[in-house]
Image 1 (cartoon, one colour):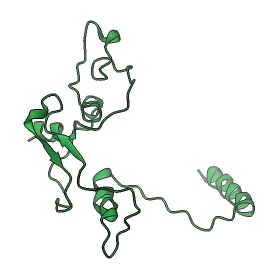
Image 2 (cartoon, rainbow, N blue to C red; image 1 turned 45 degrees about the vertical axis):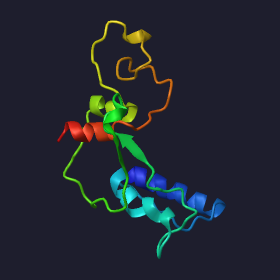
Image 3 (cartoon, rainbow, N blue to C red; image 1 turned 180 degrees about the vertical axis):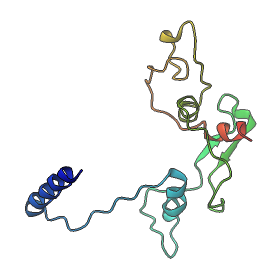
Image 4 (tube, rainbow, N blue to C red; image 1 turned 120 degrees about the vertical axis):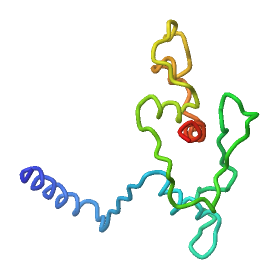
Length: 140
């Protein structure tokens, strides 16, 4: 570990003369915390900035992506800062939330399907992130 640290310091010293970067800040947070701290900056106000690409209040997820008639849930600046809901972090449940589908482990014609919850190699379209509300409702 000490050897890696020494090499890293040497690289930094060499780079500092070529690229005069004075500070690097790394902010790592889970998405909910990030949205609560910075997502509403677009709204303006004392600490806001309308030029920020942030939340508008029109961002919504269907309660069930396969049954849109059940309604939707939209973001709100009055949402609580914490949640008692802790989502399942398994591959299957994360795939369902990202692609708004119901995960199926074994399907006879999986390779022909374009559903990423059936054929896990069929990522032809980016995830629509529409399954988060569905997942929260399923977990009570």
